[in-house]
Image (cartoon, rainbow, N blue to C red; front, side, top):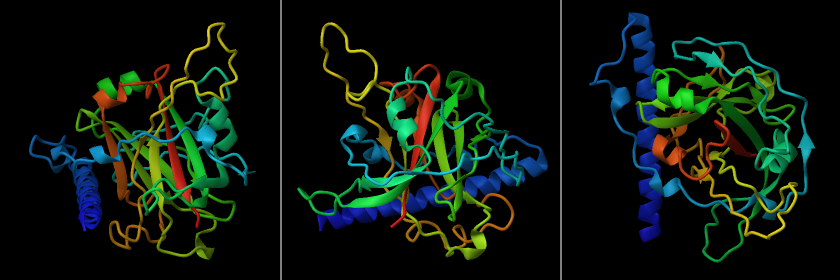
Length: 295
């Protein structure tokens, strides 16, 4: 019974956050039309529901049994979009940089923009191995974080390049507000118009989640081992719960987009103080990982 109450509480928190995000998007659209800045009574200044329980340690990726790995064609850079949302910039850099000097670059270069097998993060039964699922993963490295979280307007955002989760599948994107409410780093997930939309099932129903990588050297790093052996630091990624579109927002949010991007429904915010802890920021950059469960 206690687990049911906790599950219900988590679903209510997600729904409240989704409702708040929809209201903020509408308010921003009206604000932009009127050419005014939000006031101190703005709904955008209402704090998000507490999601502290979603910040948990994630097992090192080197222990995950990856079997099926299919790399897709390179993703294109998207044009800037303006649909009433303050999308100030679109990231025109590559989604990641191939450089073995970056922490966890082995993982990123191997799994970015691929389909592979990965355990489900939450097993329904205690002391039970999590089932393995076919998933798509996308990594996005953002540079210049210090400037973005310290000086950007709270409504200013950065959009990732669009990407297909399978060759004939849905087309998605990430949207980040580095200084949301002046003190949070907020990540949104959305769907956008794609070449395969006419042949896909709608509304969009695939479960997904976001992780902010803890950029530490893992045991699988290719760097030379030190003369004096040291115990490697295990990463502690910040992770959302697995979002189920069937339980979040209305079906209209997940329906087929007709003009550009859909309205973002789900997202997760990290306080700047948490962002500055551990190694979530490395070399003035952060890495966001999106996992989409394909089955």
